[in-house]
Length: 200
Image (cartoon, rainbow, N blue to C red):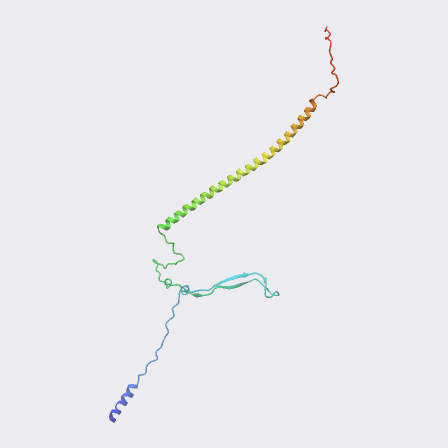
């Protein structure tokens, strides 16, 4: 039994011995460059505002000289919209579609609606032209009517003045033509002329 114990001990010691190994060099994977960044993250928007001279509202004794002020209009944020792959997998025959520059969808209904809208626009433009011409004619007629009204007022005033002058003239003429009134109790004198003398 002792032999049985002695034999396994060297076997255990031999089996525990390990070979020396070279150290393994672990290299991290190369990080992929995200291009374009907008596919993953929206960049922040910074705007410059150029200010002239101004007095500081919090400190009236301080004046600022002309300088730009930079303001972050929109913070950067993650792009959560699932979109097309931005890995640049486009070919010359099939480039990636830019949704901002893609043509509008077209079918027969859209074309018919566009034609109908163009016809309606042309009709409205024609009616606007007709309305402008009618307005010009109306303005001309109103101007003519104003001139006629002024002339009518002037003629009425002149006619009134003429009637007044005619009445005065009739009165003056009646006074000049009428005989001097004679006394009614006087007997009229009748003069009888003798026969005309003979003429040699």
